[in-house]
Length: 228
Image (cartoon, rainbow, N blue to C red):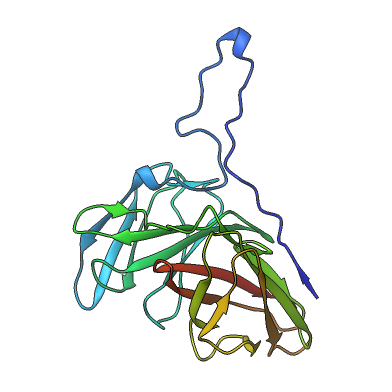
């Protein structure tokens, strides 16, 4: 059984505007503010990702960072009380990372970034308007069961998937079908069946990576959460 996690999209809370109550800085959101992120050189085969005050909101939430181009373990970060953080993550400049804020069982909409020398960039997702997945970027999986994620192609051309597999070989789930490469016709759907490797009472989390080779290179990382 697959169900979508509650996802709270960023929202500005307008508080008593008629009384002139000042707006918070940053506005109240659940997630990561990309405008408050930067990257720096660090020792070894890592990059340093930093967020200034307000980068993570709410500040009592935790932050998980996945290297999208590597199989290194995700890094969990506890932000400071002002929402700032600084952490070294395995990777190199030009590589992509997924940042996801977690608060209890809730997960914010993830943010994918590219690290540059002293800044972060947002990766292009050229098929974002016409290629989607159901559930969306976060889904949950019950131990011992299979679940289906639908890849929906509303693009004007077929979409070719060159990779459909977990980011790491020790993920708590595996892909039952299909095997890449495979095409999704225009106007069609492709069911991706995954199965949990967790025993009852265990929990785990990893990314399912859908790599697209045509009509344009693209990527769809899906956070799959194994429930206890």
